[in-house]
Figure 1 (cartoon, rainbow, N blue to C red):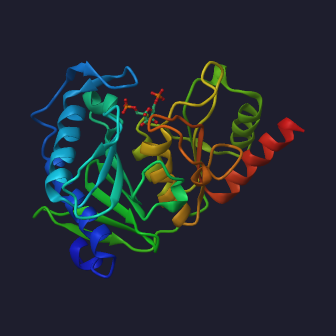
Figure 2: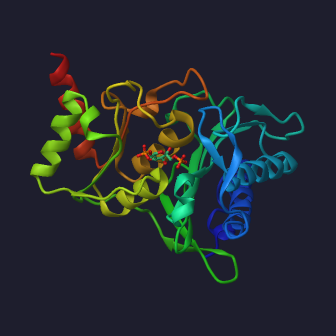
Length: 297
Ligand code: AFP
């Protein structure tokens, strides 16, 4: 079944946003070969942008503006939330146009991550209408959740997204994907990681959040990018990375946390807000939250 047929029963506005982004994603998937290397620009976090980052960002912004389907657009590559007065809806989206782009030079998987809101995007993740991500790997896949089930599609030879898996549920599994340097771990996090290792969890980490979380969604376990010495708010972005991926994993029966509480309850104060991230099975998330509680007793 194709994406447009599958998504037919959903709210018209939200459905059209997902379909429009899926069309842009097809263009992005065909853009890698001709846009190699770094751009001579940096984003608001001071990170060097790749040519693909800049192009994918401009493409998503121009196509969503032209679609009139979206009123507010926050992009990881832009300093401020953009408002499209021409919009016929009140939908807000958050977009990480190309997560993991520092891995493009070595041809590892990268992705586009999107959160969809009714109105203001500076809202807790639990208020999302839905979220989706596109993973550009050996296959280009699209995973979406509009609050009822998590579904995955793969792009076929005709460029159509065709249903691959329905009602995805995160299995139990023993994989851990630990971001940050071990020497900078804070005590509760160190204890958590050592506990997983003692239980035989296998380390699998690529450095592309979207790909690493995709693996956890399918194989179980936990992805972490914790608070650490020198960066107590962590590295990953609440709005662009943690909340949408956390929303999808939570809807698949997993959980997402900043290590102390459900990350989807956090109301963002700024578009650029960073947050420590634990995302994966409920068992692992309960464990780390328990360890942080013990740590503060
Ligand atoms: P890029 O998009 O600049 O590659 O950053 C990717 C990212 O935000 C996230 O996808 C990774 O989990 C994290 O950074 C990797 O950071 P480290 O290289 O410090 O592990």
